[in-house]
Length: 192
Image 1 (cartoon, rainbow, N blue to C red):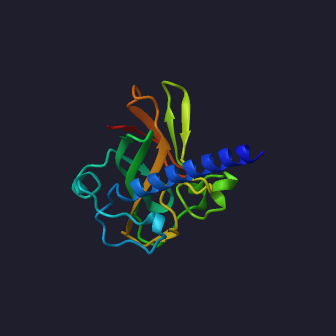
Image 2: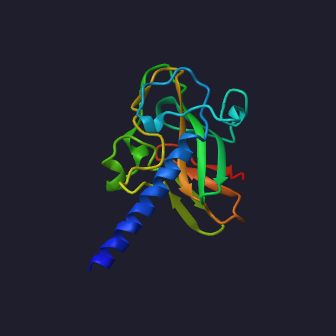
Image 3: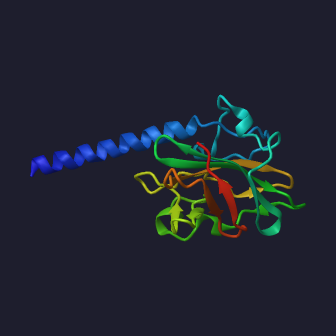
């Protein structure tokens, strides 16, 4: 019995170590260049990386723009396949309207595990039409989605750098459809 407990404890520690490594990797991925960000939790904070030009929506054309309700706009700036077996989608969530917008709770999705961790982009999915598969947002061992969290509203003209991580489709898949509740869907190219 103690051998079984020790094996379970080791597996738990390995899983915790992997999640911690992913969290450190996510924190170092780089961030947007907007100075006007609402105060958010640490998981929503992004820092500048070694190649900020791939993260800044102002200097580069977004690879996709998804229109949401009430003037919300999601500009996807990159979708990168990482060595760890996941895809990181970066972008900017922007209020293109003339009034303060409360982010619709539907963007969290409807999974109980994600809902209990507050506001996030946990409802996002990637759809690989060719393989007929849908990829959901990755979660850590506590069920927290690996995406920007802790935001609630945007003032007119304000934008927020966001990210979402998914399991990586097969390397032969380079185009997927990004979906987020209350937003239009859009095809995006995966690089890397």
